[in-house]
Image (cartoon, rainbow over all chains, first blue to last red):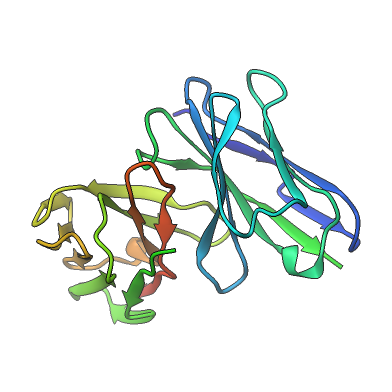
Length: 114
Length: 110
């Protein structure tokens, strides 16, 4: 069964450093998402992406965050200058059809900012 | 952001028991989804309900969407240890991304 893959599975970085989290969505999907989950808290929406542009973003997704689909397969989340509170599990998800259709989630990248 | 309240937060039961978990909001949703998440993994979709009063069954799991489309329940019959996990509900508005509840953490012991 096709799946969303995320790399790396774990990322440790120093505060203030830039990180790029990578995702390969399911190949024929058109809608892409980043969510995050701080330990013990709920899954929070960050951003949705469709047709090579951001379709929606949350308050969390400030100027320190950016997303890119540099080629036909990858979907990346960049955090420009990490803060301690960015430590979380970051999930990429994709969907074939419109917003709120069946989302397929990756296994996540655990980001630890020291 | 529309708040989704899930209850109970934690539930520990014996194998073979039945259980119901709830997802409530003051907002009306165009759709509501239930996911199960296991430690270290991403959420996996179980079901989507879109019509008020809708009931869907997935083997021993029964999902119901409230008539007013503000709440939902998940009932598990004869729970098994393999049902252990975090059950998340997520509400959707047309054109907007899903908003998740905090989840119900279920432990089923043999």
